[in-house]
Amino acid sequence: MATLTMLRLVENNDTKLTLTAAVDGSPVDLTTVTDVELFLKTSADQPDSDATTLTRTGGAIVDLDAAAGTAVATIPAASVTPGLTFWHADLVDSSGRHTFLRGLLTVDST
Image 1: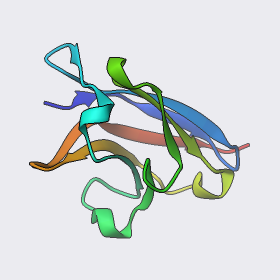
Image 2 (image 1 turned 30 degrees about the horizontal axis):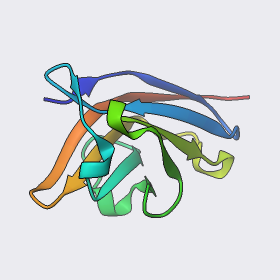
Image 3 (image 1 turned 180 degrees about the horizontal axis):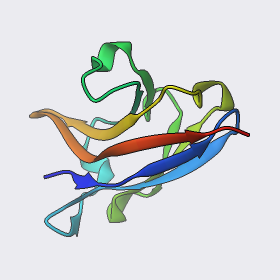
């Protein structure tokens, strides 16, 4: 079950977001997953393929403490725009995609 977390970003600001992956309170060792992905969306119903997507394989997410399930996503200012209302973070492994964080997203104007 994904942890529900509200996220507040400031428009046109670069942001570093710490992501911690856990299942039933236990950290997920990030070395056991293929990728970590972060999606910024205009609605919960927006397809992931149409969302702003940041990935570990793409270099926007780096492991901070892989054994503890902690990574840092660098969200560029150009991606923090009005209209974003939902976000989620997924782990991808050989068994599929697993959302571990999700929630409402607010973008404050500068």
